[in-house]
Length: 269
Image (cartoon, rainbow, N blue to C red):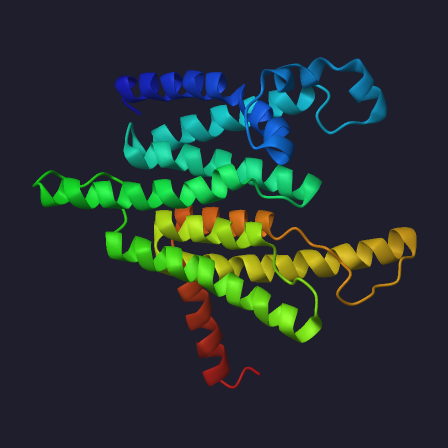
């Protein structure tokens, strides 16, 4: 790696460390108030919260958030250089970390990330479209405006329709509104193909995680499974699926489908 690139990676790591200090603030502030409030800066030092086992108390999690931010920032610049793709890599990863932790703890996905993420993603695609139309070189990361609009519609519409079907059939909410808005944001930023691939990965992981969770509750606590009563935060699975597709593309999924098709054609079933 050239010396100048090493310097860029080190700078990115320092910036990641500085920004990473605010990740814990966001996680503590967003579930209840959807805003940054200075009081949440002192949660880590709350002795009473630490005694009660409060999610927000303690500094260990903050150190882990900073480490995560540093590693993602440094790895992104090392892989893609100082580029828009490296920047959105860090933004996507940190945003997904926040969504994952908040959804696991509170079964909530902050609207500040999902709804504003939709509009910012659409504006970014529109800005890239105008930039390219003006004759400038395209940014290292951009999505066609049409793909962004379709991704926004498909991402939000598919899960919303699925939730309505569950409500109609089972008289219970089957899909949270936060999941719908989060997938719409992913579609706005990455296009409709990424939405479909994200759903495939997230559905598989969610099914696997749900089954393992039910088995754990059964073995550890002896709890009987009751249909339609087991709440599963789906946001973390959507985040994992989205990041998988962002970093590796849809080729691994298409290759897996081709291998499965070849296995079926060979009479392997």
